Length: 353
Image (cartoon, rainbow, N blue to C red; front, side, top):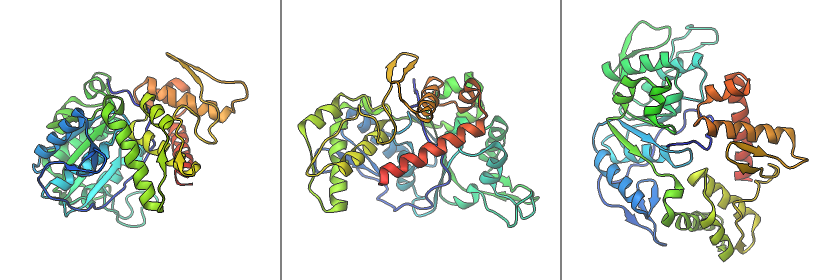
């Protein structure tokens, strides 16, 4: 149900976000879009999401956001934070799938100086850094099961101990979690503890993929182009052919893919922006022909590019399950993470060129 495109490994990101009014309807933007918190949309599916956020934001309920990669799950978490009484306190985000099992405990709960080799100072974990605010746990189904047990206890007792420490510490954080997998299927497959699921999913929110937001696609494309024009003092416009191509494309990478595509096209265009979502990204080689379960490559495609596409397609097949992907491809989980980080850096270079 919630097949992943792919999501790059990340780390702890923002500490604070600007507070906004705690209540109120979506704000109508020029061009037909509505803005609610940090999110944009005009489709019935997004209006429903806005309504859910308006209801749950001011509460203390734990929220589980479920949706494909690139849909904006972190924006949902930030909007929940902004709508809450905790809006002036820290917002901390961590990608549970980005850290090796040996490091995730220290990143979550911190460690004392001398707790292990290389621990040259005391380090507060994300539960401490988010004190009084909101902690966003992305890719929760990628967290090792033994750590899920520890996390469940912390959520229930609001107490934790740093690695290498003896003093129990209390925490006051609101947790918003997210996954790009069907959480109930993840329980069946043994990737998520059932008791943790029900502790996190007090208020679940299903975020629709872009292909189910037909009325939003072109509005978002124009919005992203308007942002680029304002940023650079230009007046570029989409061609009619580009708008038609945008409407035809299924956007498997969702809003993230759309935004990156618009940015690349903007950089390459003069006054009229030509968008071709079906073309390969610069430097990435030819796009392979697709049949269900099959990848086909043109003769002359580089081995690194073939490897990259095979990794991404296998991640798709196993709904973002990195452990299963690594096992099937015959590589270590560390090697898979290294490859994904490499692809993330490469994509970032093209997006900011």
